Length: 215
Image (cartoon, rainbow, N blue to C red; front, side, top):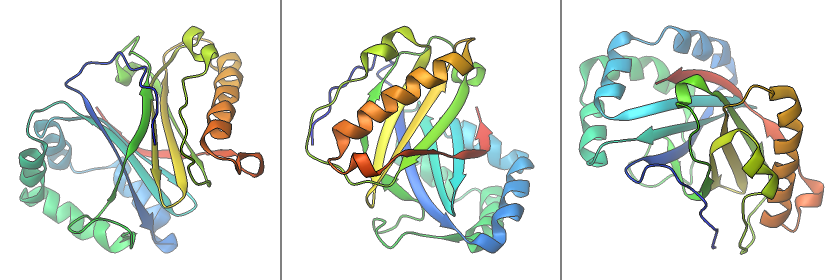
């Protein structure tokens, strides 16, 4: 599969998307818990060079997106794994989750390949509004570009990921005309969906709810 990369973001930023299931009986508790994340957990995430970390929820699926700004991802994630406060946090969150059967060996959250990224940041992610969408479709072998209309919109940091016949989109809005611009970027999403899948006429994008974020 080939996609045209139109990104102008810093080369040292790596983007990661991942998936896991959430047990329905724990949904409310999970959301409340993440409103009051242990400060030590947030510090360890930051010290491990992870930025702009969001978790989104829809229909029992958790989709996470973050940016890595360090130079040794394996080492930094190992430091998270051995952190005492983080391990205490995982004792609370792990029983709420169901790892995907299709995850790689050693993974808890299943990693997702990034298919497409474009959109230089007009403002820091912390000052933008974050959105995520999912489409329940497979992927065809095609080349796509960013919609031409996106050049004139305040859409930045658009990333596309896939896993198990689902396609996830993450984007940030950095403008001041959210209502009017949203209809334009959703039209662009429809264009991308058509390019991605021959079954797109029977599918649509669904918005996810952000339940966690840390800069």
